[in-house]
Length: 130
Image (cartoon, rainbow, N blue to C red; front, side, top):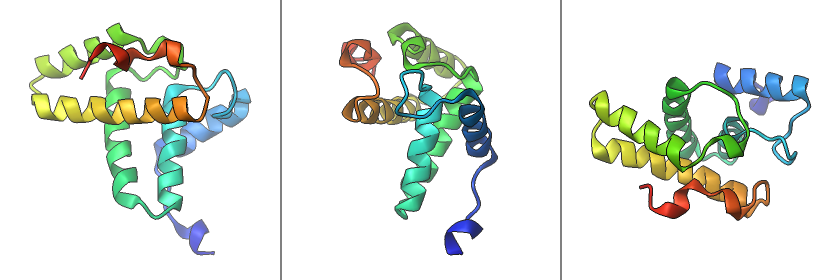
């Protein structure tokens, strides 16, 4: 019963519905980056890591604010993250904050690599982006 009473952010619910309707799960070849990120947030909440879940959610919100397309991992290349970095800099976000967003995005990406959801040959963080 306790598990059912926890509040789930609307963005996560919307992403889960989209994934369900389209038949996408995080283990499927067509998994989306934002969808996987949402699933990690839910995992962290279930493990009681609410602080980590909150950080992941806040960072994800910044990426969604920049580009709200729900795309597969191959959409997010080095140039995409570099453009995100430049955009945030131009709107006055501090370097440390931008770095925090990118480090979190890299952690999510690395978790997808560790779970064999994506292959290492599509890793935009290899080139020293952060």
